[in-house]
Amino acid sequence: MKTMKFECEDSYEAEKLASLMSVQKDGTVWISGIGAIVRSELVIQLRDRSSHAVVLKDSATAERLRQLIHDVVKDKVKIRSAENLGATATINLV
Image (cartoon, rainbow, N blue to C red; front, top):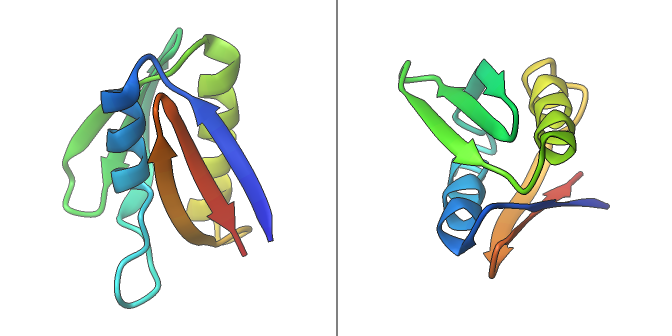
């Protein structure tokens, strides 16, 4: 199992990211893609067509998250769980 950590602007942003990346009962995630990335802010699109912005620590962290979401959407990796502790969101991959 691989673990990726993403430092966010604050604990609220980390909690939001962990929630957006959480695994549903059927084993899927609600993420459908990336709407935009502006410096350290990433707009995540969900299957219900809603969009949610997450502010990360810096642009490099935002780019790492963009790549992870791309890989999840393309089924290259699967998320096992997501959690947050303080301003850090931890994503566990299968």
